[in-house]
Amino acid sequence: MRIVHLIAYIQPKLGYQEYFLAKEHAQMGHDITVVTSDRYAPFPDYNNTIFPLLGKRIVGSGRYQCDGFKIIRLKTVFEIGCKVWLKGLRPVILKLRPDIVICHGMTCFYSNQIISLKKKMGFKLIYDDHSLPWVAKRGITGKLFYFFFDFEEMSLCADKIIGIADGCVDVIVEKYNIPRERVEMVPLGADTELFKFEKKLRRDFREKYDIRDDEIVIVYTGRMNLPKAPHNIILAVNNLRNSLNKKVVLLFVGNMEESYRDIFRIHAQSVENFARVIATGMVENTELVRIYSASDIGVWPMQATASTIEALSCSLPVICVDTVKERCKNQNGIAVREGNMEDLTTAILKLVNNDELRIEMGKRSRQLVEKELSWKIIAQRFLEM
Image (cartoon, rainbow, N blue to C red; front, side):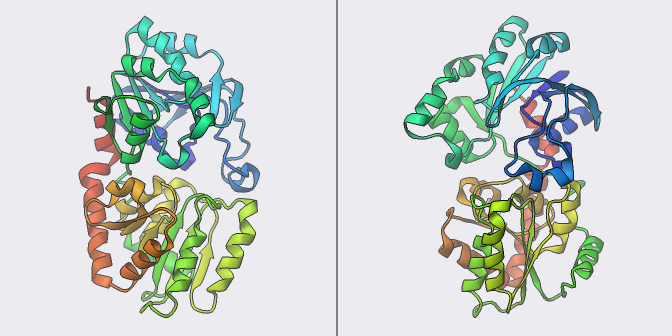
């Protein structure tokens, strides 16, 4: 089948759902084209965080090949936040003659634009949305924001509507006013061939950073900023300085925003007499397997991230927010209330001090991914009508 993934931005080096789904659909034998903008996403503090890895944000329009699928980058007429108006979208879709269009995001300009093309061409239309309750617009501003999107028409025209977590389904139902029976939860996933525990990678990484075998590595990967609050991990460990029965190393991997550097530094200094803090900066998605293999516990104290699932695939027990508690459904981790320091502290204490529990949860993490959260399984679920 000819499948189009319609997305505002794609950054293959960073991974994310749109890349892995396109890659997996191509490996299934489908003719895949990603139609997107001429730029990378407007990550906060781009020049200090993303530029060293990706280079200039404006890539330019054109056609590219990537891991078995095509990318068509269209000129951006204008951009508001993370929403782009793509020049020439209609003629491109008409020329591609897709059997299926997967529209990533229901609050994007193209999510309305694609409806008329669906009616004209008759392709199957799938919407998926990633909005969790913490990003949902509220109050008068929210009502005005959602007014510009014809969710009723989207619901009527869509052949499938997907939320990538239980919390996302709630937003689609409650904020977009789409009947719950019209919405399916299809989670994010992991590349199980790439993301798997590697003993040699663990040994090499630990030797590089002089981490002993008996030290417990608590890892956080992703954006380093105040909303994600990775410093909460340091605060929790500081609260436990007299309760932990193991030495811990706190490993932070990600793009640190300039405005967050002093906050993070102050917290890191507060534990330097009994816990090591390592911040490596951002790495390509494929490099994360070394990080997870070298670690013992994955922690994401605020908001949600696909990194959690890649850590699961590498046999890590995880601590994550309860808006994505389904990622701990196999008794493979602990879901905590977002921003609740008591929950976070208790969870870290439980996993650090109990070797058997930590190892057993790690095994259950890999089992969960192999059973439900591999991109192979998820790519197939997207296409089931």
